[in-house]
Image 1: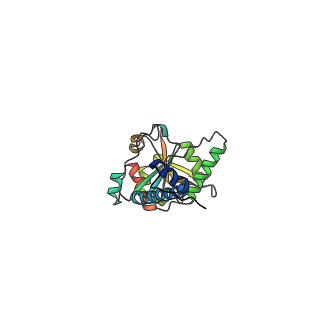
Image 2 (image 1 turned 90 degrees about the vertical axis):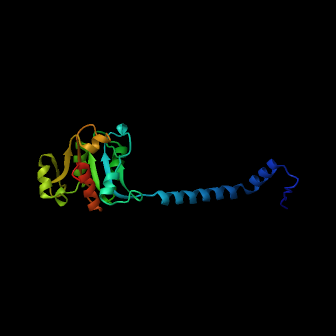
Length: 216
């Protein structure tokens, strides 16, 4: 028969020990449930829907000091800064000279993300951008930019070779001393920026692309 506790005759420490011994799993489960509920509430209360996402490949992550401030961009285009944000992903680094499983995994993960439409704007060093561009990464800028804009950046346009047709198309713009890249120290040298192939948020992607170019 289970022993019943006489709390009237027990010391406070004995009561605490008794409760823990007999109800510890109930207490642990209750704590986990409460923590989960609090976490969910906090998540939904603070969650911001990405209006656009930019992936910066092989950027100088060690030099990055602060998260980029997109307040002016958000306000200019009527986005709600409390509920929406621009997502910046600097987690993709690939050494094309090293044939490692880590490199292969990173490339496959990025290609999968791009194919799923999870990226809107892409940027990277020339070497990695050209490599990924030839693997269906970069969209044709003729589908996004006006003839006037293409003419304005004619000297800086980077042409990508389509893996299937072997035809070349404008897949990016090489930028040097760009105000945004320089401000946040993402690249120490020139980099190339373009629109992601498979981008599903064309308007937001174009807005962000033009903003970084300084044309917005």
